[in-house]
Length: 315
Image (tube, rainbow, N blue to C red; front, top):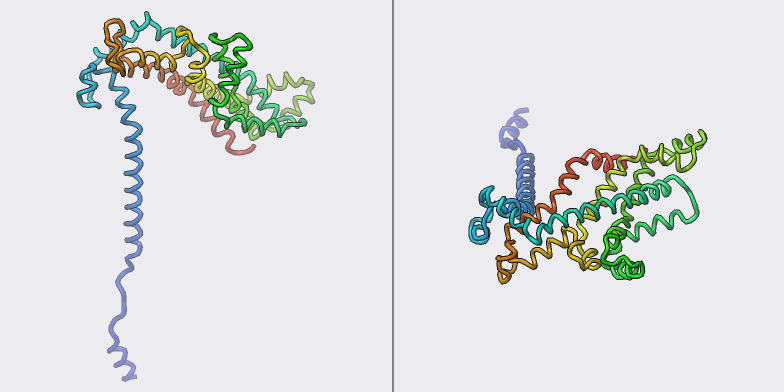
């Protein structure tokens, strides 16, 4: 026992300090979180700084916009001056373009909803020969670039005698296969077929079943499809550029390009005696172009959220 006691006394204490691994792990996690935050902030700055510049541009004069602090605030009086100059362009042509954009967007959306909702409902609720082929064709059509369809669309409009009319923009914009697919996903995942069968047993026709069962239950899909269709019709540029030659039929997107290209906004050689439109006025015109979509988005968020989440879980 004495030897064992002596031996144990001679062995140094091997007790280690508390492990440092949790601290190191926490430090690495904090470093990763800090790095991720910096990347997010840098990415947000890249996208938000141009938007902030666009919001502040109409508050400045042309000289302050090109030579001063790009993110400085000017004055509200400059906004009024820019608005006056903008309204004098072409004797109020921008108002005409705004009305045209509203007409194109609403008409294309109405036609798309009348066709997309019943098509998506039929694909989801009925088994018919060629159903899968139609669904696959819809998916393939969604990924075809619009530029690839411009030539056949132009030739069709020529044969129909619709070139340089509002219908040459409205009808192609109403072709919205993405809306068919959205409606299909919603009805397939959220509406039980037992409801449709119950309506049939009660003696309702197929049209009546859709109008009084499928359509009321599909309001989220209606709102989501309508929003996306209106946005794509509102943002059309290449289609009216090809179909229209009369500037009184331009939409805001094409008209804004015409305004910027034919005034001193980007080309000082045009001067400002008859067309007093410079960079502040062009920035204000861009804000006018974006404002209606933002307003619709603000008032339609409830339907947009419902349409996006209701199809996430199958009923």
